[in-house]
Amino acid sequence: MTDLDLLNQMRPYYQTQDGSDRSTLFYDNAFANFLNGKNFNANFVAAFFPVLWMIYRRLYLPAFVYNIILSILLSLIALDNIPMLIPINILAMMFLGNFIYFKSIQLKINRSISPHSEEKTDKMAVQLYLLMSLSMVVLSQATGHLLWPLELIFWGWIYQKNLKKN
Image (cartoon, rainbow, N blue to C red):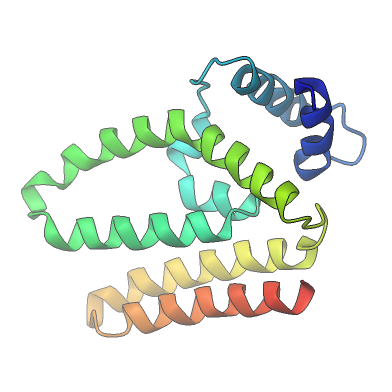
């Protein structure tokens, strides 16, 4: 299989309806660079809005892992050191975001998962994540005990919705 064949197989996973928008062209170029051995492509949306970007791009498992790792790091690091984590996080996601997306699409192709199997979950997932994030901010002021169950309920809902479709 040539690089062009693989790129054509990947395209339905990130292409918009007409395929002529900037986002489709951006991922065409980014994934072509990965296939040509150029490993670093900057993605500013992934850098500054990582979890929302991952949910929008149907990267539910990476979003969950990222969220858990970030939550653990924030609970372990002293409050004085948290500002150091912000630029590290931004740089990591800026350069790893497209690679994570690329590998995720390759995995879906290898497992024969349809590119449009999760369409209804996407909009609801983003809305629910925003609502959950707002709730967590409000609840964290009162008590921190409800944060983990809320997060587990959210990710359980995502998992359950995707199980029904496959």
